Length: 113
Length: 111
Image 1: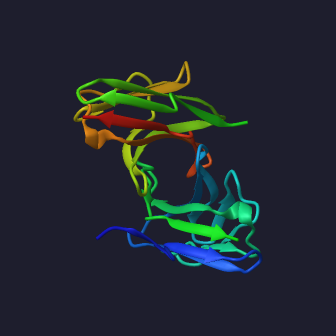
Image 2: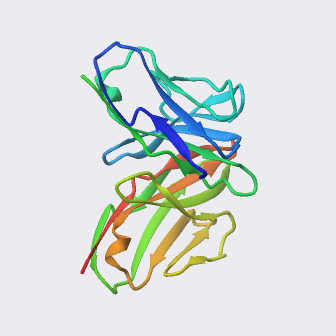
């Protein structure tokens, strides 16, 4: 089954404790993205990747890091989480041309206390 | 500053009504506009629009793009309670895979 998976699905952590949210897709997609969703703000893109070792900043990259060492995986790293990073996070992937339809993972709800 | 604005923010209708959701945008290097439906989980893809004036249709849903006036509409006819969701509009710019989303329209269809 074609899918995007994220782990963990729920996470409660404390300020400053480094964490990684994993994202994996099994569709051989070139393009992958991370978004955060906050009430009233819609989805905001954090980072995106056009291929292995090619990443770029989205709208709200501060406080986040990513890496793309393999095509299928695109982890999101919070080196020193803060309460304002409490949010719902989505990973997405797409194949690119001709359609940029994005397939979204199930979401990770992160709470930073 | 690139931005995407959706209206209305929320809408309550009754089954059988027709609704029109709006999405306007101001971005540099527009490439495409996409509509998504989000229920209590991840967004699911509805339409992708790249050319003005060409209607995309899927069942009771349809959408059209006006690149001159910088907006798109999503129409839903004969609404059903299953159409209740947040509808998101996103614009892709020519950095490929760089997207700007609107804040969404929350649609509530009452029986």
